[in-house]
Image (cartoon, rainbow, N blue to C red; front, side, top):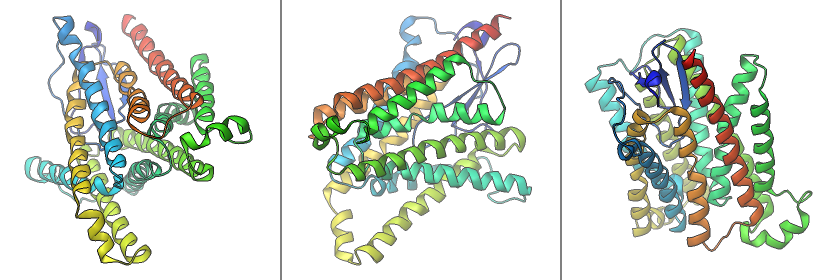
Length: 373
């Protein structure tokens, strides 16, 4: 980050999915962070210029480590044959507790206050799409290999750009059109529909999924997750800028509702599908679940590292480096899992990664031009 864009201003009215960067002329820049679960980011001090290259690279190291922790934790939970949604329950209990202590005991915010009908509507939109987006992301992991799931998940960057372009009636630039095309081709390569890749799908089908239709179900669920989280980001921005809604309250609502959904899913599963208390005990009271849930608690550490990273890195660089989740997932899947990715799936992931680099790179250079004026 150069001297003209070295001031980062985040307060309790900004959410953790959007970081506002202001230069000396008070021009704003934004970035959407992509880490689960989310938590409020509060930074009051300006970022100082890094005196050495080693210190300058610390931010990138934090991003890479956070991405590695997030990807590895859910991969290990799946390899332990534990439902990731179940393994995340202790993490969301801790997450909700931290946010409740922060908002009520430290900031002394009212947990309920009268709001305008429009604000209530956007709060509902925000909580609904954030909760369903996160839930469906982990739910889709039942049907998809991790690299394919995270690749579809990271199309969120493109969906957000498309939705904002439509809402603000902006004419898409050539790089944006190229990024959309690359994303579309990448998703097709990852999905590998039979009517386009019949021979390839038949040959390598067992190396990616035992059931093509189950795989298709997972892809559709993952696509919904990506679009839902894009809508959540846009509604977040609207709440924070127009209604000045407290970010920590937004995050608390999300964490509590998500926790309730996760617990409700367990209750529903073991009362209506299995109807066997012994099956519940077998799934939750064993060393595999204990290990998986403890590993998923590391998501909190990933959040802390992400907070430190956003203090040091330019938003566009942050997004590009954080998409290394795709690379980590490919390595983990093909080194430690019996289910391997074929060449088309890997190429599709690389195309989506390239489209993310184009979109964020375009934003980076546009901001540089504005700062020079």
